[in-house]
Amino acid sequence: MSGEAEALTRDADVAQDDTMAAPDPGQDGMGVSMDRTTATLIDRDRNEVGMVTFHQGPEGVVVQIEADGIGEGARGSWHGAHLHETADCSADDFTSSGSHINPSGNAHGLLNADGPDNADLPNIWVGDDGTLRAQAYTTRVSLSGQTDAPSLLDADGSAVVIHESPDDYESQPIGGAGARILCAEIGAAQ
Ligand SMILES: [Cu+2]
Image 1 (tube, rainbow, N blue to C red):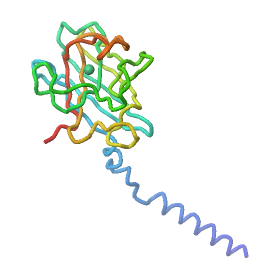
Image 2 (image 1 turned 30 degrees about the vertical axis):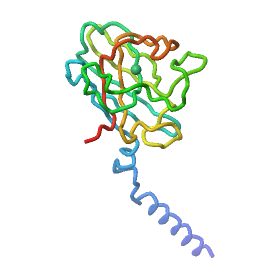
Image 3 (image 1 turned 120 degrees about the vertical axis):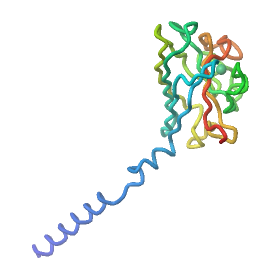
């Protein structure tokens, strides 16, 4: 009897080891990359100044924005940051990126009683040395339909737009954030 019990224990150990040694689809990076994408941030002179990284979580998306060498006029101040409809930063003033993503039909503004819209993100700060480091989190979009929020990687992609002024989180349609100074195409057509 004790020999049988020992054998069962040994089998259980072997089974556990097999489980642990089995290939994990997430460990080669493929599982991760499906839920992650990056976009290159450009300024109005079309210099590549930084990178935006999106990570899909179970309920929302973490957005990381990093840039350097942002022009003097934008330094030492807050700037509105939004998700616009189309992966198209081709126009000099970035208006080619379209309006805010907003199938919800909500009013614009994180602090608007009838908001926020799907595009809304918190303001970002550009330092006196022209560097930008920011992270934000939103449940109002998804990367590609992982939640029921609209997809950034839809047929025409989308864009991150940084504006010249801060978003007041309330006024329509863009919180008084003014002109578009930085733009990144998300999932641009190749
Ligand atoms: Cu905007």
